Image (cartoon, rainbow, N blue to C red; front, top):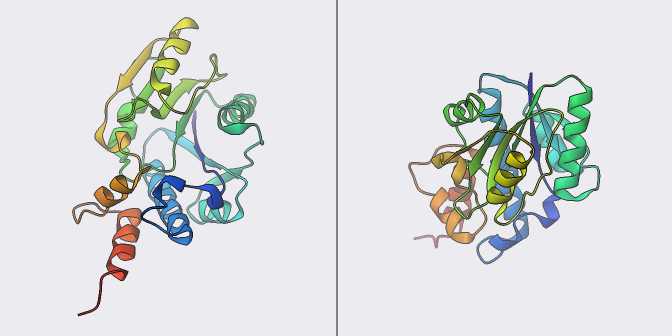
Length: 212
């Protein structure tokens, strides 16, 4: 069985690089909308047996539960340490695989997630446009360290192979697009993008337009 883990940091600290475009409360609204999109995609993906949001933020926890996800504390070990601790707990609970998927991927789609889950390699990585890792699928217990952060893709590839695991790296458009910079949020606001986050950013931008 596969369990999906979605880490969410404190909303007060989330998406600081969007500050030139969005006020703090607007950034928090966008994060919660993106989380809703990601959880909806996971719930619609065959092969995902359970979904947990890894967070200690009360608002993010409430949002996760309202979307049908469980909530796990973030353990206070930093991103990679907390994910590793959660993965160890999942292995002890009998889960055979874990999917780590970030909450700032509002264009994630069930078809792409299914492609990630169904690959022949033991470890599947979804590459970000900047060389990061936006999603990772691995067997449990986790047999290699995690390196989420800047330029993590190559580190994950090397670590998994060093531990004797086959690796598939996929370049999937929806999973490659994360919202980190103002230009990302503006791209998300394009009319052809569906979902809660796209609607949220469009609403924010429309509210700023001068009335005629």
